[in-house]
Image (cartoon, rainbow, N blue to C red; front, side, top):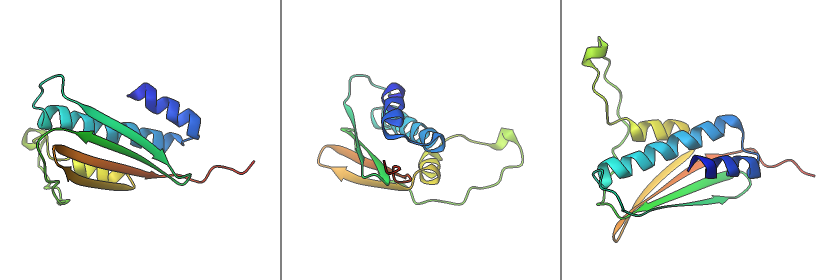
Length: 125
């Protein structure tokens, strides 16, 4: 996936900050699908499509995993020490922080997640 994103970055002159955000969000989404949706079982389909309007980039990820209902953002609970910290549950918050838009919808046999990023229009030639 990273090689494909690197190619898109070059082809669409995507800024480095957006490149980082795209990689972070796609990696988080795909990891969640594989870990939670497919429970670590191999050989399940995941598709990723890309579109650009010139001022926005959208990645649409589809899977055939059981439906999940994205949680609303919650306020993080402070922890007194690293020992109190429990991993998990922050993936969607992370994606909301780095993506311009995040939209989930159930499919008859899976899920669709659209992750959007705003970019400056390409310079005129």
